[in-house]
Length: 297
Image 1 (cartoon, rainbow, N blue to C red):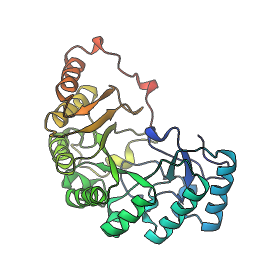
Image 2 (cartoon, one colour; image 1 turned 135 degrees about the horizontal axis):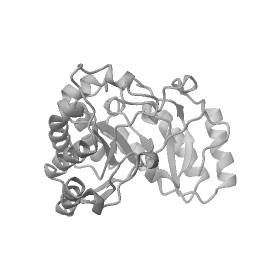
Image 3 (cartoon, rainbow, N blue to C red; image 1 turned 60 degrees about the horizontal axis):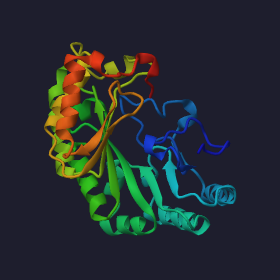
Image 4 (cartoon, rainbow, N blue to C red; image 1 turned 45 degrees about the vertical axis):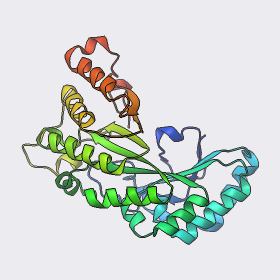
């Protein structure tokens, strides 16, 4: 479902929220400093919070048009920046107007989990917030500092574990290629360590992409830094998956940015995924890889 015409475009959502009603609770991202991210850099995406009266009117209007909605995604970059009280009031309106609602989800910055207690997060869960998408990007502290993520390995793990204690499921995203050739190994190993410690319910990988150009990103790295080519991306993914020790995490590497589509459950399908990556490296003609024109952000 598309967002309402009066929303401030562009509006982004995770691939798995394709059939969800999108409610633009905030415009843009409350951090918006990450070197790799171009989602909210347009002038019209300056961070702001939608007024309750506007949002509640949109919720009521959406319910008249689509009364049987079962999933809602709270956009844009991080609705969790709002206070628990305000989020609860939004969830209350959603529950009132959408009796068939099954799940409310949102993007989530670890720093905005830190400001909420486990009891507050449990309140949000009980009110319908069932899934948080956390862009970890990497588990390597050196790399996180270089890209100005504003988070560390520890803050990300703490946030994920806190969400789990509250009953909120997590979907973690790792950015394949983020470390280039210089930091690739430590990026892969420490990212695997991060997901092993946090055991997310869902795990996804995207490939570093630059629709608006590479200059802004490359300016954060030393001169000897080089982006990974396709085999380099596959090798990094191979190393990442090989070092995961996950119990029952649904894994997807099917975002439009990826050259190679991978799907499975980790750790059940770990060897199958590694076998496919081996083919991608040694005999890529045997696989259907996305061409450059097929890829997107």
